[in-house]
Image (cartoon, rainbow, N blue to C red; front, side, top):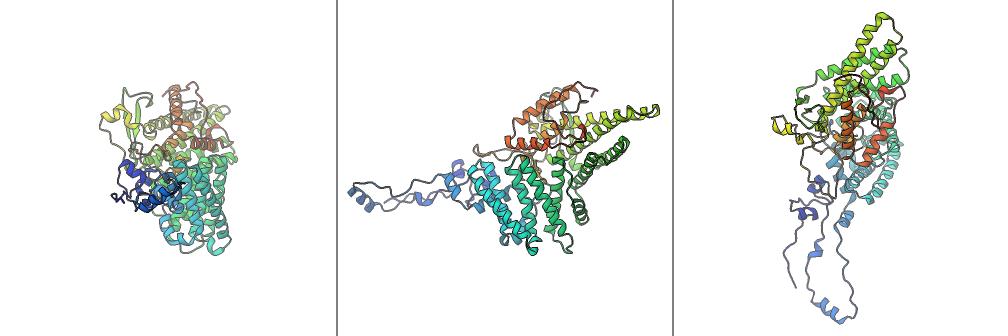
Length: 547
């Protein structure tokens, strides 16, 4: 008989790495934070018992029979854990935060504590998304089947709830629909998932509008509605589709009940203007080139004012460093932003203004071919001003690449000089498009990036076996660079630099997420090249101007 020392009760991964384990089950917080498999060995495997009689019996037997099954591997132990708890832990740890600008589901904790235990639809929705995210992060294809079963079950329960007037108006029903959209994009990296996402969002808009007549609205409901509005805006913008019926009524109601608008909230309001303008052009609402130019200039002035009024904590530092690596920086210049979220907002406005002025250039050329001599001078001046602004916006987008692509600290000038560093605790945006969130994340992973993802320079200790969702910023800046490809008036050296950076980033991102991004960009509007969001093939032309 032997009595060994008491075995460690820490999980397998923490023992292997000799890190502190809080021993939470089914997964400890350390493993959840590091996005790695977590499993516990069974203590019975390490207990010693009085083996005397068994040994005697064994010696008298001519047949040796194994009395115990072989030890269960850690991966199998993970499978035996409570999948409901695993899914919930992963979902909360990765996609739920307290700030609506960085988390699409900031309303869920209070909602779940109030309705979660009584709503099987919400439980199944969270399980589906949590397991799908865990499966993708850990490359556990076997869990996709379980996640899909939860998804199917959630859809049935949501349908049952919608058929019941009492349940249809519950916050848990609307939030379940939002979660289903997240699942679609997460597991269907193609146009099918995007189409299903649109159906979920359209249904959520209809349901939310049915609830507008209620006199008393909880804080949770208002947060959830704002999240829905933001998701629809980002989805319409990125997929090049009109805003769904009933959206504007819901947005107006949300704005009247909102606290003072944030920078992100104001930015989304401008996106609504841009989406409406884009599809008014597609529907040929504007009958003359002058009408198009007038509206484009009006929107551009609003965007310029928005940038002028940007709060100081969102402003960037412009660094010109002669001798800097020209492969990593364009024209030896780059920007340093206080956070990646600030950089994304700046770039989104720049890209929007760039597209507006491409339209102005296109319409000015039409008018120059048919206008009288007296109008030629003003049209030529407008065209020249727009071309100059397009180049300026493109340069600024290029200057954001080092930070958003994650190699800012590799620049010699960044480490040599006393440059203000971005906040290391700044969070990546998740998709308000169901996720940069992200949330959109989000955007693909660039729109579904987990809330806890830190900026590019945060230390990474992720297990080799677990490659978590990629940083949202890589996909966002890739989207911006795609948009610069077809702009023929940009300098040739800039277009070459953009193409070189595109190829570099494409080599860093997840193949499925990249496929989804490209699928989204294939859905182009039909009103001409100026509103094409991006070009998936390199187009390098001779410059028609200088920097």
